[in-house]
Length: 598
Image 1: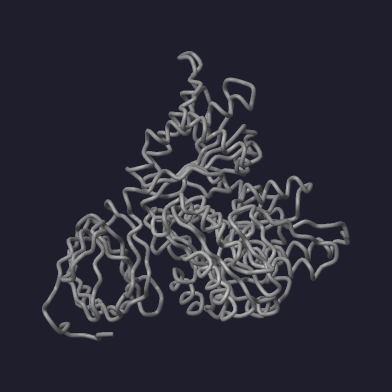
Image 2: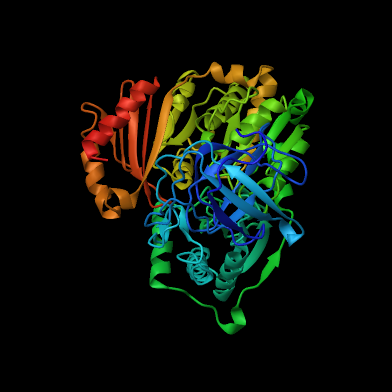
């Protein structure tokens, strides 16, 4: 890293600064690179620059201190061009030691300082931009998602909400059902929630707007208010250029697959039962939903034990909807909170999916703060990733295992010997099966991907103790039927308090596998129409394996498994494999690639 003075060379490409907080499009980060901020006033600073895919679209780059703490605000940059020739999607590849200059406008335009940055690590083989005009509106059991201003617009939100309002009227059997609605912190959420409320009101629905809250908080609000349904304006872990609509039933759970198909059919056909002018609905606001949700969690955990432990916790809320409720929860549990990216402004400080590649700040901050644990939420706070006290990324796959272990321990310690049911989707690690096998009379149900499917399996089994997905989503029925990062945090902290051991020791005592998760753009594999053929060819990848085609194709063999499936929420296909070692996992991945031609 360059430590001072003028950068060598003079071949700069100019970057025009967008006013901070302006129209920002977030493009996925792919690599870490080193950079140096030469001056901020008269004081030299040195930072790590998160490398993002370079496109002609506006984008966000976060400058970070070498110690892991944010020191310079997010830099909003527009129309970045380099000396390199851009390809057809507007991507520019920077050569090793490329240099550029950026005039950064701080919020309010009060200050304008020049930053000189040197790329000191070449970002090789960056994939094509996700900001593509040909991406359709994604409609699935997970709701609707699209690109803001293209496939997800206020008219689309109004129509989808009106279709759902009409559906709820039919199910409720009355003309004025009550619907709770909330949104995550994305800047596009304000316009979309207003449009959705208008659509609901136009069909005669009464609406309670609970504001910017986590998705599971809307589920809790539905039960609190005795509502007939709920709706959340969110695109979950998707980048900022996406937004979406998620529907919830009167139980606060995503609709079952058949019901989701009916909602989609109504939306496509614009089969809407608009109310007469004298029977239009009305909307009201409430702003206590976070407090109600937190109180529900606190009432079901061992608060005194956690508070006595006095944990120092680093929480990365990625500027999402969990900022407020996450802070309240940890304060109520007596934790000393170090909150990073805790302003719910919707401009995500890093790629929002809580995976290891995106959580460098959390890992560094957890270690630097001598914290007991680090937690990462996604933008709508339904998923949770965990970092141990050493700064090691434990991962999303362990979240469900740790939370499940806590409830299994508590249940068996109470003297309950009844059969206990856990549920997980087909893409979730075998660790949950190994954990269940270590207790008497516990079984695991496997379902298609999607929390609606996991929740439905538990309900059909009579409730279930806990369920979730390997993406960090934990469904704790006593709190609600939606994945919930708040409940997951409380369970992990309770496990730590009871064990009286560092989190690293707890994790190291659990089964361990090597998992690889890959994703490919559908456009690169022949489009959606090519998926069925790919899945058919995948069936022969592991001869003698057990094939489950409930959701794509999963094949289990003695020492591992692979799962190939199209995403419900993005125009991609996912390939996931797990085995005892990384080498074995890579072999499984390659066998599927060989069989399918991927």
